[in-house]
Image (cartoon, rainbow, N blue to C red; front, side, top):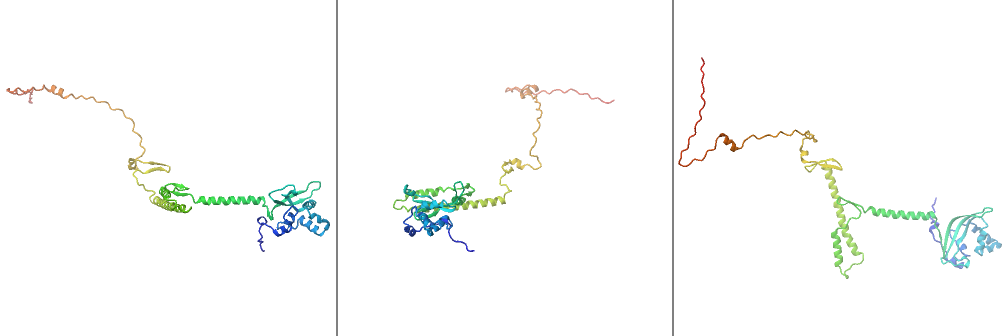
Length: 327
């Protein structure tokens, strides 16, 4: 089954300048016949039926002369029809500078004793010699939503490349430009004269290349540093490089003292404090001073006068002891 390659009616623009010139221009009485030649017209409508009957019946030919007579005959019938909903000339009494005719495709249903029930189907605009089909409300909302989603996708794609991670700064969105590059750029811009001023855009491009290269090197070094840190953590994760190891759980580590680290494992860590003991009884010192001790043993000797003989010390007599003999 061959697929139709014809474009949608709400995506095309139709015009026929030779036909408009043959009709004497687009006016109130020629706007509907000009519309009949466009691909928007439906040949099964009441407009086509009345036009065919008027061409073959001279008594009905007056209906084709004016738009009021033609639309009056359409109101007496029911079914599909095309009516002018807006006329900028308004029968010549009022002028509308927009110059836009609005033709509405609608379905009319007769109801006895009541007004006709009219169901609008679509609308068309006649601007000069051009005819357009007005999009439906669902198409307008769908187009707006599609534009919004497309813009959001562009924003997300642009923002996805902004975050970067470095061990020194963590997660950042706009990494700062190195100060040395910024100062060099400002100095170069101040030293350039008016004659050697480059064209707009060339200097910005040269300055933007330097920080981009520096940022790429910084990101590479940061990634390499992170990889080395992870390798060291996996290899020496259970070893300690200090004398006071950490104890506890993640989030509540405690640094142990060196004495506690050197204690044997059998000795309990939490030792109860010793009970208070009775204070000792104070002792009285009974030793006499050295001078008093000498006086008790004997008076201190006086110095000897020159020319006199030193008196000999007298021996003390011992008590006699009796010896008993056995009988």
